[in-house]
Length: 86
Image (tube, rainbow, N blue to C red; front, side, top):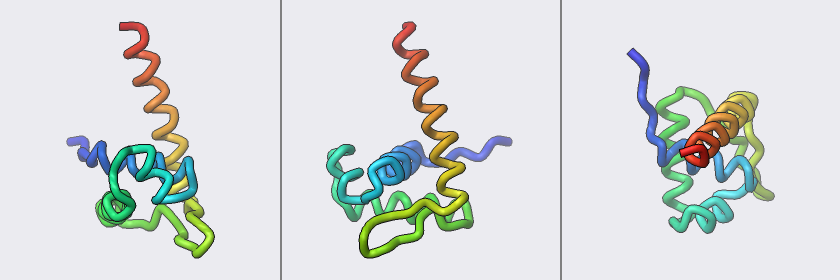
């Protein structure tokens, strides 16, 4: 059986990885910075691995984070293309 993960958490992670910032991701998603941080932290717990190295100057995706970001980017692009065709 396929495990389901929170789409909200996946969107928060993708935005944070793309922008390099929980604050920028929060602005893009119209939520608070702590909300983005909480969603990413929960996703990391669900996956059992860190997705970011948190640094004072921003976020750096771990190798697992880079792999997830690539997969999500491709998936979200495919969803957008499919919806455009409808």
